Image (cartoon, rainbow, N blue to C red):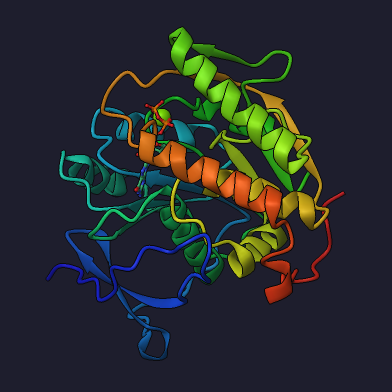
Length: 298
Ligand SMILES: Nc1nc2c(ncn2[C@@H]2O[C@H](COP(=O)(O)OP(=O)(O)OP(=O)(O)O)[C@@H](O)[C@H]2O)c(=O)[nH]1
Ligand SMILES: [Mg+2]
């Protein structure tokens, strides 16, 4: 029995994301996702609430590193549950996760059967985290070992709504990137910072900690399906006056697998998002930008 997706429409930054209900089915110890209209959403298992800090890993074909990342996340000693959102890896990642689940019952794996983009995977993970766990904070990191799980406690030590693991503040660094990649990343950040007036140096970093109220605000408003989701979430946090901090990290170039995001298509979507928000900053607000009204962290 494999999961079946009934909707293939990727969310668009310029349209509201469809609210698709999900239900999960077990196969070989992994959790497979079947997406259904929310009215038909049925849980075959109870919701569980076991932890205050949840990890979220968006994954696509990371067989070379996923096991080490999962081990590292639990070894950090700060994560109560870890949710992996896989978009149909075909390189053995799922087998690695299957074996990891035998060692770590706190590991949950959701598999969607078509790649819909990083933003879509993260939104799905946010929605599932809220639905499944009574968490206080959500830690997100990449599955290619570019983000060292041992740094998680340092990020969590900052009591802010959004904590960004930053390559571009004092103490942060990038290992093994050539000059062109450094310049593209730097230019993307500079453009987003200047055009959107964001006071964050590393807007594209995927190593982050979110409080639950911010996760709920993002769920209520975000619509980007691709890499530009990273800037959309910082933009939303900033617009809604959530507290934001950056912590220096050492970002290490992936040593296995292939990049999914360093593509001209993702760069175009990123630039389009930044320019659109710079020109029409209130576009979504007129449609009802809303905050859950929960308290801010101190
Ligand atoms: N579920 C899911 N995960 C994705 C998707 N695209 C990328 N990822 C994951 O998101 C994380 C970041 O993607 P990367 O390809 O490493 O992006 P990047 O760090 O900008 O590029 P590199 O420097 O080449 O690694 C990794 O864990 C990927 O496996 C997707 O469409 N779906
Ligand atoms: Mg990467």
